Figure 1 (cartoon, rainbow, N blue to C red):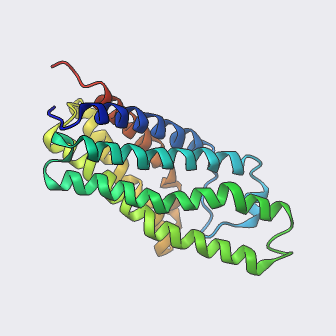
Figure 2 (figure 1 turned 120 degrees about the horizontal axis):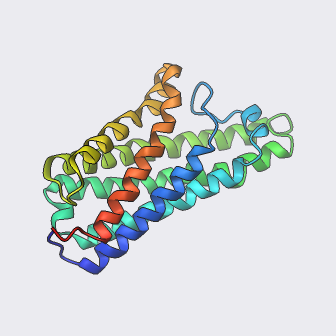
Length: 218
């Protein structure tokens, strides 16, 4: 694997590995979505670790931004052909916005619910829900498009020399990860449990990061 900046690649790889693990752990404990994108007070109230779950996810998202930027700096085979550079850029920019969803959930929504919202202040609660929707629409599709591109390029070019079966498995779980968003947006709510496809997808990203940080000798 030819790189323009091997040190940036190594740093980015380790950061992506940590990011993938953090998000995967958080998502394991995430409740199943319940009919749409808006957060429901009943779900928040019945999930005592709502805050820590989303704080862990937010931390992983921030690291994902950093890791993607470092990969772009590393350049070389990781950003060739041009779709590779576009994919990593989409992941970085998408996560800048999508991190807002986890941040608001971790630091605001559970706080409001614990203090009686939306009953006590429906307008404030609704405003933050709308902010979540805006951040989600700006960030999640862009991030998933980038991650899909990275997975597809690994299948096609074997940039980090991942075993073929794992490369294909990564592409499959990343494509399945689109299911929650599609289900919530279209009313096909039976697709929403596919949010848990993000767990193996982020674990795959973590493994990809390790391959970048510690490339195989052959």
